[in-house]
Image: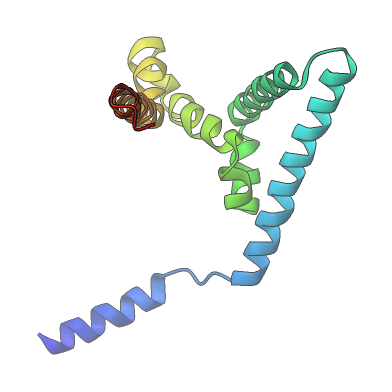
Length: 150
């Protein structure tokens, strides 16, 4: 039994990829910084057209999501995430990519059973958690206000 455990540990060590910490951090910082700078540039463009900051920010979010969906469909964004790691996955663009990627992968199974079912693989639990947690926090705030504790 001990020999098998040691052999297994050696095998795991052999096949586990080695990650270089600092190059990964630098790549994530650069990719995340580029995405955020692009977002700020788009926001500034919208504000220069006369939109208020809140509306410009909303439109910027939509543009970034649409661009990510298109880049994911063209198989470009997965290459960006492979290079930039968390720098590409943490912003809203990463969420958009995680929603679209399963749908693109299963498009061969058809519109309903492929794209329609798989597009909610990641988004479904996230949306459910967001709605449920906001509802619970709303009830807590309502109760606290009713007892004049908030």
